[in-house]
Length: 357
Image 1 (cartoon, helix red, strand yellow):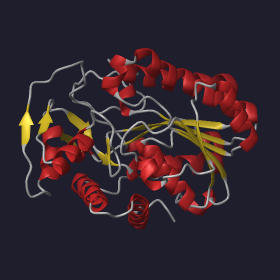
Image 2 (cartoon, one colour; image 1 turned 180 degrees about the vertical axis):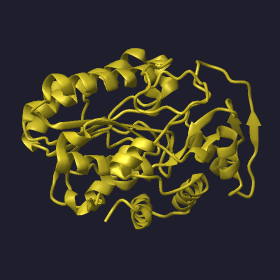
Image 3 (cartoon, one colour; image 1 turned 90 degrees about the vertical axis):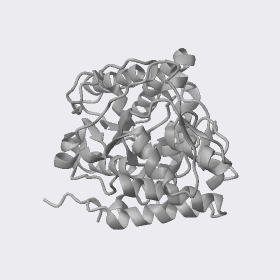
């Protein structure tokens, strides 16, 4: 059976995307638009400066609704009027350290917000496929060195991680309770994502770029922490593939899937930083004792299921992921338009991805 997906499937499809003003959401928003999808996007205004979404779209597009997924009345009104066929849910409070400062907001957005989007999708009656994007941090991470597969126990030390575990449990319960004759719902758990246009606080690559392009010292708190690093287009390709399979073949794919790098690309923070700084003529890195709330030091994923069931696989190794990321930032700060850089890298990725026709 040919399991390659023709992305022309998205042409003319009504796609609802939440979280399009965030880093990954902005990349997915432009990718869907470039595929000819009829996209309606819904999210809070960007909360970083610069913002990838604002750099690509200085004026808010007509199909971009700036609102809160916690406003269930507005959400239901928008979705029922649009009647989407496919939903990608990315809207969330996505930062571990912020979750310690805003625990109520984190749980409200990541749990009740997800429930609101699910309920709006069920009420509108047009949805066939729903991809809920969570995180690799949804696992009960015991930091034993074992990579986590989709059947591992869910949990989470911090409020962000545990809220995403709750979103996973919610999705499984919702599927059993309401979707036996409804839309096909899957969850996607991605590893640590790098790529151009991320300016979030307390993330490694944005911190690197802010330091490198301002001439300031780069301070590392947890240099020996290990994460499954991957370029942003890796998980996004998985989301698109999963959404298409759910749309075409239904509940056969209504499960949880990990999207991460090959095992050898789970690297220490200091190794990723070294790969980045080696591409600059000068960089001063300082190591400081870790301070602040707990963050996991070791996390890796098994991606066998996505390979076997979806025919998905990583395209870039760690070196190329870093190369693409640094290339993006250097071009952007050199004056290249953000939208052109994103579209260029999407086209390059598609040429290499074996699972797309």
